[in-house]
Length: 323
Image (cartoon, rainbow, N blue to C red; front, side, top):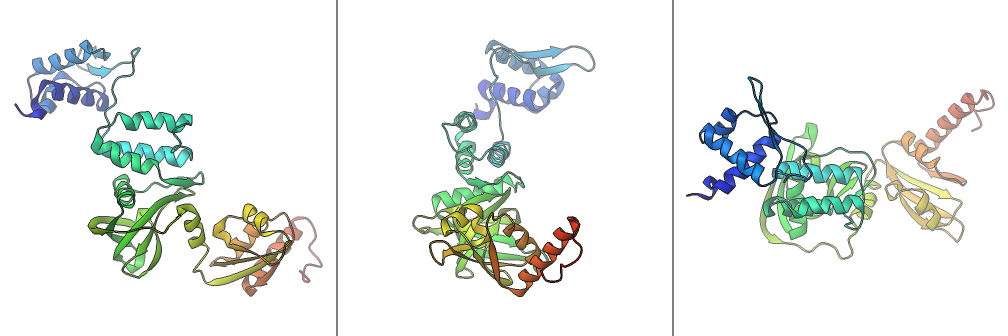
């Protein structure tokens, strides 16, 4: 007798079918199990003997479903369902990786009872660091493959979608996966470009594990490295002088808005790049102290335009040309 044809395996399969298809008939149940209707009813009886509250309804629209009993019935997850659940919890609760918290503790209980092939990638994904409340989840299987490769330090070949530029094959050392404001990123070293890269996980269409391993940078902080990367490489080079110590500026502005360098004990130079001066200057208005835009000219013009709009909104439509 094969393992999948054993009474125990069929009873568990019966439970999965009842959970996934509430109201399933004995005929459909038997067809899925590959047994007679009488045998299908017998497996339902086995579940009831085990204390699982299986309810039945007679008639042309009748069938079986798992009811609500005093005990929670065993949960049956596919690998994709388990990974999607873990990712959803991570996006909504940034303490999900902390086993001492209520969310992390509950998620840990679910992971512990999953079969090993499902639990291993789910646990790896659970340890991904997150920042920000919004959620844009990529494919769970792709995400799990990237996280697992980063955990095991295996090199990868990935297919990366560049939009209008097509799909680019890349060989990478996957350092870490991190979530920032709902967007999932792979922080990696591209062996193809011989440079550090940050890839959006939702644009990774294929993942192939290669021979060989790698060693990530010592003391790597994935979120900090991600924030730093997002502040670099854009069209306009930004320099802003802020009238506050560097440690305070770093607290007020995220690392993705630039690098805070102390000029002296009371003044800080903020260095960054941006493609959107209008957006960037609005972020600077979060500073609770005075600041001066040194460069670029486009950022100063964006600040002047914003100032004129604010004065007009306040009823001061004249004397704005000197801003």
